[in-house]
Length: 211
Image (tube, rainbow, N blue to C red; front, side):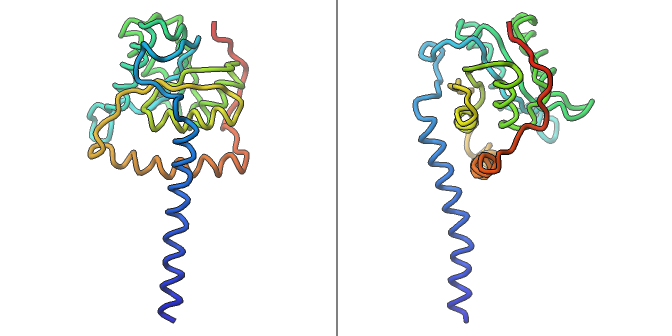
């Protein structure tokens, strides 16, 4: 009886672990060669899509993921590797509005307001990528986030018919971002579940032309 319970326990632990490793490996392999960390090397696209995150973390401290994405977007724009910026993030309540906050900071960094477009319904990465194609009419895009996030976004985009490359914002030390890194493994498993179940964005809406 004990041996049988042990075997069951091993299966219950190993199967989810194997799924985590396989999904992670598939996304890494798919995105290989499609992300860039240098403005001199990345190809030009008309639109850069910056993926939203909170400006501050719990406790009110600045969120380095946020700050580094803003800096990466400004660097890409100043290097003339994008002409327009689509900010996609969560606008779930009147007290929390990622796109508007990011736009304000981008404008403060010198990017003209008329070149910035907002997607208020980017509640998840899947929503952001699908809406970039279906609502904003994009056929190709440069995704701006940390490398691990870009890889997942690129995989989703390509599976949804949107050609994507990524510009990697500076990451943070593993020790400081371990919770985010661990959460990413589970997010990658969910990518395959969402694709298998044909999950759709929460909202679509009227089409918007970026020009």
